[in-house]
Image (cartoon, rainbow, N blue to C red):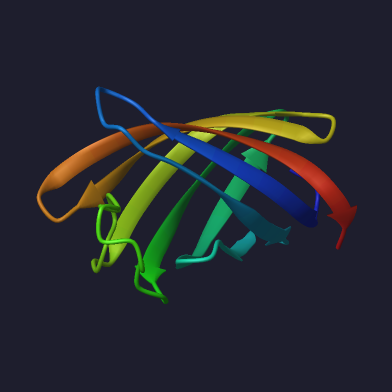
Length: 115
């Protein structure tokens, strides 16, 4: 995975309704990122076209819409992921531990700028 700024689009799986979009910066094995409500820090490694890593996510801004029920809302969430990186895009699959519940997801990343 090349150093840079990436867009990330996440779709929850296994019957969980949820999605998110944001940006991450990947630089020398460190990931920093977020969206309007959450921020994440973590690390990654890659070998050839395979990548894997982990993140810790926290909420920084509460949802204003009372009908919205964020999957990660108000909790520190740990996540593990693995996937493949080709050219300037990546596809990863992972599992987040939300309290005592595991939530799986698929994410696509697209490089926006060099870092």
